[in-house]
Structures are given as structure tokens and as C-alpha cells.
Image 1 (cartoon, rainbow, N blue to C red):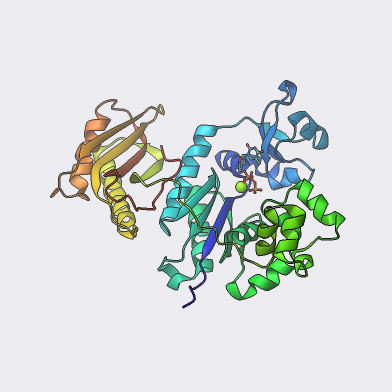
Image 2 (image 1 turned 60 degrees about the vertical axis):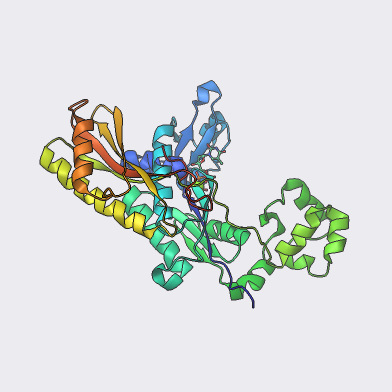
Length: 360
Ligand code: TTP
Ligand code: MG
């Protein structure tokens, strides 16, 4: 029996660092904006918003050159703790839909949602929902590509960037691939592209008349990959990099809180959310500890954890509240963030595919 096609989503946040700088300072939205080093100190651009891209500014360009192309360019220095924090939050959103998550960078991942039951298993609707949750919860946009194979999902997410969603359904793969420029294929860099072009090979369809053997003779082992990709074959699995060690949920308040009543309300809500997420895990993992995380108004942070006994109630709000007050007593300052979480017993399920990349 033939396996049914896989459902792979590639997600990539739009101008990630720049989008976060705009989120933190919305007045910047109307300016060409880059994140990077100081032009006077031989700094380099990490990324820029789409307005700045219209002037030809791009990643890895010396900031001084970027300023010459676009004199009104605003350049902000980077804020990695923020980027990492939002990246962890974004990956946590991904975990609501699949355990098979392959992180590629802080703002980019493959998800295999073949086993996801939500939205009747429609990968396009799942991708739309992920995009919606990221935008409403984190205030940035992420583009998504959906396809039955990895390299096409990645190309598809780029296809309608920024803030786009593009799907290549299994029945459209062959047609879609034919018109793809060869330089879009992973592994085809400048040198291979030029070599292909010298032979008049520009699009995937141009390889139709070549056998795998001929391509291997011309391009070495990569020729076999070229042939397979040019007809829409890519068997690579979505590989989650690490086993999940914990699950957590946190919230940053619009206004700092300090009264016990407010803290209790927040804990109640967080614990409900944590339980929902735990129930969505496709492989149940044994919980070894629960923890709370508090960030005070001076940005200092503290965590407190407690072992979970075999018969202990995991999702008891009272227990989380007790832990929270004990942790709060260490500083007794207004709180700007509160989180609750679970640590999983190590190696209890060595086959578990879960990962929670970039989490603190
Ligand atoms: P990318 O996803 O490549 O770029 P981007 O998110 O800024 O823009 P796009 O909309 O095209 O996806 O990289 C993610 C972040 O990684 C980016 O915001 C900044 C950082 N980065 C660097 O610091 N240096 C680099 O050369 C690149 C390419 C990215
Ligand atoms: Mg990106």
C-alpha cells in the first residue's frame, strides 16, 4: 500500500529582529529600519524591514554601505535576550500542533503535521492558525509554506513572503517543480548554478531529458539529488533535534501585578493553559517536577521547583499558587511575568520526538 503524502509546514518569521524592534517601538514602523552594528565601527546589518529592502539594504551588508544606499535608515543595535525569548514563545506555539519540529534557526522551523488531527488534518488551515496565533500572541508575522516534501515547503514559505501562506498540494508538486529555477533547490549555490547555466540548464524541467546517471557524471554525487528534487522527490524526514525536557506557559502582564488576588487569578489561568497543552502532547511523558517562574519589575528572575510524587495532583492551582508565593517572598516586588511549567522525567520515553528549542 502506498503511504499517504506527508504534510510539512515550513515557518519563517518576517524580518524577525527588525519586526521585534518595531513591536517594542511602533513609531519605527514607518521608517526604513535595520538591526545591526554601528556604521562608524565597521558594523554589519543583521536584518532590515521590508521598507529598507526596497533601497537594496540586506543582511550581512556593512552598515556604512547600507547608510549610503538609504541615508534615512534607522539602525538599532540587537537585543538577543528578547529575540531568544520570543523565539521560545514561537516554538511553544508550534508545539500545540505537532511534536515533530525541526528548528533551523531562531525564527525558522519545519513542522511535520501529518498526525495532527486539528482542522480535520488540513495542513493549510493548521498553518493559517499557527500564523494567526503567532501574530495575536507575539505581535509579529510569520510566513508559512505547506507541501508534502521539505524543500518545497521551504520554497513555498518564501514564495509569498512577507506575511504569506502558500501551499503546494500533492497533486500540484510535479507541475510546480517543473517551473522552478534550479537555483531555488537546496545545495545549488552560485558555482553549481553557473555550471548548470553554461549547459543551458535553468529550470527543473530542463533536467527532464537527463538520466540520474548523466547528472552524476556531470555534477558528482549531488547529481542524483538534483535529479530527484527536479521531479519533486525529497524523502528527508522532519527531525526534531532534542527530546522535550519540559513544557511551560508564561505571560507578561500589560501592567505589573502585586496583589495576592491578581496573582491567584493569573496562576489559575496559566494552569488551565498548561493542562490543555499537556493534553495535546501526542506522547504522554512522565512528569517529574513542576515549577514556577517569576520576573520582577526590575527584570530579575527567580524560579522555584517542586517534585511531583506519583499520586500527586499535577494540575492543582493551589499547589502552583503556594510555590508562587514562596518564590515571590524572595523579592516582594511587583511582577511583570509569571510562568508555570512541568519538567519531564529524563529518558522515560527515549522514543519521544518532542523538542522545545531555545527554551531557557
Ligand atoms: P532570516 O529569517 O534569514 O531573515 P529575516 O527573518 O530577518 O527576514 P525574512 O523575512 O526574509 O525571513 O533570519 C532570521 C534572523 O536572523 C534575522 O532577523 C536576523 C538574523 N540574521 C543575522 O543576524 N545575520 C544574517 O546574515 C541573517 C541572514 C540573519
Ligand atoms: Mg525570517
